[in-house]
Amino acid sequence: MAGPQCCSNPPIINTSCGSDCAENYGGLNAYVTGSPNSKHAILLASDVFGYGAPNLRKLAGRVAASGFCVVIPDFFHGDPFVYDNNRPLAVWLKDHGTDKGFEDAKSVIDALIRKGFSAIGAAGFCWGAKVVTELAKSEFIQAAVLLHPSFTTVDDIEGVKSPIAILGAEIDNYSPPELVKKFEDILKARPEVDSYVKIFPKVAHGWVVRYDADDEAAAKSSEEAQNDMLQWFAKHVK
Image (tube, rainbow, N blue to C red):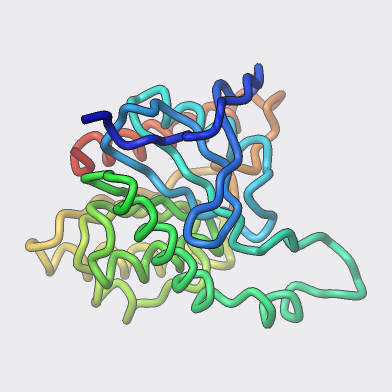
């Protein structure tokens, strides 16, 4: 029997992203890349700027190169946040709540399971981290990684059931180091949930996918976080 298809459509060759294609997963358009023979999938939940961000797709290529099928759904249905004084973030969020994102993510995971994937991990960035946290609380995934999370609370972390890694920034008003350390204390008190928490010095919120490629230090910090994420998935999504 053939393995699950990551990309059933003919792949588009893109020099910056590798072999990739656009598919519909659970009613959402998605950017998909990786081996069509992989049985292990990774869902990447974007920040508010959406699934088309170049650095996010570049990261998807790295994850795919490690042997995973990678899916980045368009949780915002063609309406990512843009800086516009006529539509501040608080207004945009009313139309794109993380609760709706969680429901959409479940549909994507159902589609992955129907395609035959035997293990699924998820990583979330900023807005997407809250969505992934909800998935980890409900055991829809085998492993979770939160990167510079927003909206995730202490109560959320107390409810997590899937192995989880949390990568935070030293300079972050959305998820300050003090809060991330609280997350770490909660997880340390719950040894039944494998966890890893790390705060990266001298970086700001969004550094993993919002870095300047010409800034060597910023790119290096992002790469370190990406490596941590890949190691976590290699450990748990198998």
